[in-house]
Image (cartoon, rainbow, N blue to C red):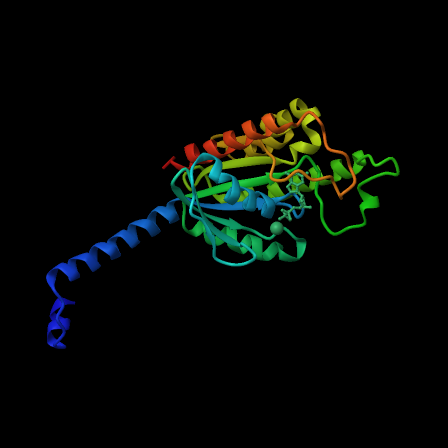
Length: 258
Ligand SMILES: Nc1nc2c(ncn2[C@@H]2O[C@H](COP(=O)(O)OP(=O)(O)O)[C@@H](O)[C@H]2O)c(=O)[nH]1
Ligand SMILES: [Mg+2]
């Protein structure tokens, strides 16, 4: 390059050349680190993937100041820093209509291991574009059959995407974020047991017993279900702070696994 510049009659000092080389190396290294910490986000429509991503961008500040930016307005791919470490998070569309797109993304990710997954579940509290009457009864209580049906959808999803991940060699970890604890915290023991060692966990284990699967509660936003259902009062600010920082610290710990 220096020779070319000289041939073209340009003054390109060795120092400038060296610096430009270093800059390029730094860029290559940065990209490599980003690729190393690429995380794909899975979860059914209305579980809370996009809110989780937004919350991570904002809350990461709680651990350390973070420079962050989104590539697209819809935040399909977001770069952010958690505790100074860079991450690239892919927010996959969860709608039925987008299913093929979602699996296409997963196949692409699989072609470039290691795969890291943030899997968003919500104990069946999926909020999306339907008539709220299907989810909530006349006493403003959530219908048990609605929650059950949507937990079933979470399991159905899992059965489709886990086999696409490949084995433990290609998949470093799955972090299951059980979101919306502000709605179900009173039943936390039952909820966490279901995802950590119950039916949900067994489904992942049955595919590969060695997959690293970590399950943590996380509250992205305090919000009444379909703007109607009262929040669970036991999920107060202190619990929220504790669960949030635990979640972020875990991402950092897991992210450093190579
Ligand atoms: N109560 C509560 N609602 C949440 C939480 N996270 C997301 N939501 C709500 O769930 C709905 C779906 O969230 P969204 O992020 O769009 O889900 P996505 O379809 O998976 O991307 C929205 O109405 C959110 O306000 C949470 O932690 N707590
Ligand atoms: Mg979304």
